[in-house]
Length: 129
Length: 405
Image 1 (cartoon, rainbow over the protein chains, first blue to last red):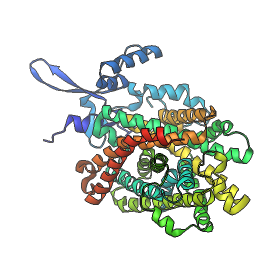
Image 2: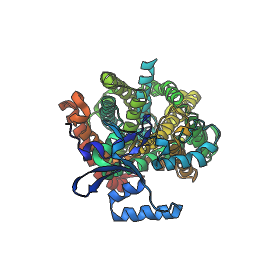
Image 3: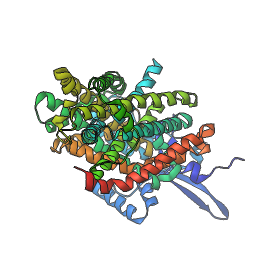
């Protein structure tokens, strides 16, 4: 049975979807606590607020302020169940479609509101295509 | 054709290190104030950038991932944020200086003040990236950049005392103005070795799909590229010593720079200087704007490529667009090009330990590097530069206060 070091080989590693499209990095990991059974790795978290949590309380407060200023509402990091992981190597591949993940919100927002309104942007990918 | 592309990457990186506004102006200042005595600083910068480029390229070729990518993964997001922030600040200041360099070239020809050219220059650079024509810019800069060889011709034409030049290649204590001497030595190193260069070079290695088999090629490209750039930067210093010293000891007006070539070659020299300045600084502008976007994209796992349409990589495209807009905006405020350049070079020198030390650690990680991890030669030279970079960090601020301006 192969052993994988969560901190060195999973945390901060690049995530790709089933088509090898980049979908972010492993910004956080969760343990799932189960009644009467030992805990197990629950999910991979991706998102700015997850990164902020790793910097401590002040960073979380700043992240929250920025979200409120932007009108973002409650933080909603991307939660990828560990069962969706297909391979762990140089990158971590998950059985998901990057385009439909909340981690891509900024990418979509910038693509639709700004980048694709400038002539010559081209290459527009349809979400959920 | 593939080989030409690989050599172009090395040449462009080295032009960004040695022949853009930072190196041109610091080498010219050093030649005017101290003759050939600071040639050693350029030589040291050449060896330093060569060793660091070779290391960053080998890391990328063997691990198939870029330096910024490895930094985040190996050291975690908290540590990563420090070099990232340093690279972003330093690169932004250097970007604004390079936009200033192109604007200055335009000012010399049109007599319209440089500040008015800053935003148009930034726009043209942006348009080329937007039309994903970076390969064109890269090969154009590498090809047209060969025009810089004119500094070699000028160095010979001005009949320097070669014996004195050779003596300048060994460090020596200054006979006058020690603070200014060391200030210029640190600026020269900062101008030659910028952290954006290794991030740019390692991203180029990935975009050009080099593998562990290309480690030898990487070595050749890093050595050749740096010999080319470093030797020509020494030629700039030689020409400056011949043209300016002993009557003019400080080069603080942009109008003085074209004298480097117009003194030996007249009107043709003036035109060649303007072309050299314009081409090399424009190449560096595009390179740095891309590097800012590369560092963010690789650090946070965004899609990135210089060869895809902006709509596919919206965050990546937004990053270089914003960098160019802000860099052009900073120059458009009317800040002096040479003032900003000098400040940027000092801050660059001070920021080096933040990227050089982690690079050294990564190159010794056998898990990352397989059998291609550092041998003792690479470790000794990189280690020496890591120590040197810390000295630069400690020396930069006092020298800026005592010897700057």
